[in-house]
Image 1 (tube, one colour):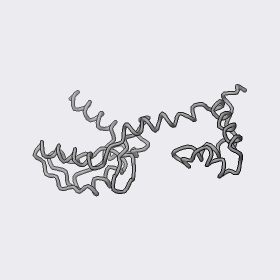
Image 2 (tube, rainbow, N blue to C red):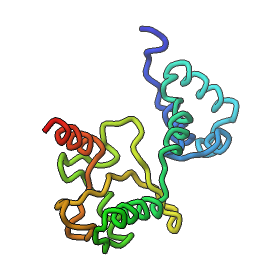
Image 3 (tube, rainbow, N blue to C red):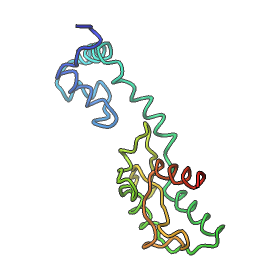
Image 4 (spheres, rainbow, N blue to C red):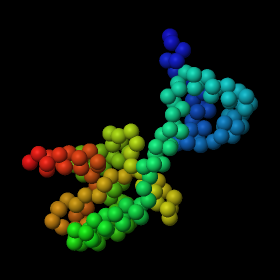
Length: 170
C-alpha cells in the first residue's frame, strides 16, 4: 500500500480534531496536554499525519477563503432594503425575520445553505451575538409584492442562476 494513501491512526485523529479550528481549535501544546502526551510526541504525530493525509491540513486555506466570504448580517439586510427602495417596493420584514428565513433550506430545491454545491458557502456574521452561519438569499415569492414576512422565502445561488438563465432563454 502506498504510504500516502494510508488512513490516519486513531491517535493521530484525536490530535487532529483537537487542533482543527472546526473542532477543538487548540494549539498543538494544548492538545498534547489534553491527551496527556509529550509535546514532542504530538509534533511527531502531526508530522506523520501530514505525510499520510496532506489534504487534511488545508484547513488554513479553507479558513482564509471562508473569511473572504463572510458578510455582516446588517449589511445583507441593508442591501435588501436598498433594493426595495430603488424598486419602490414595500419593505416591512425585520432583521430578525430575515435572519430566520435565510437560514432555512432553499424554497425551490430544498438545499440547506451549508450543503449547497459550492466549495465555500456564503457565511453571515451577526456582530451582536458573534454567531456565524451559512445562508441562502432572500427571494420574493410574488415578484409584484414587496419584502414582507409572508412573501419572502430562501433561495440558493444555483436556483437563482437557473431562474436567470430560464428568463433569458424565454
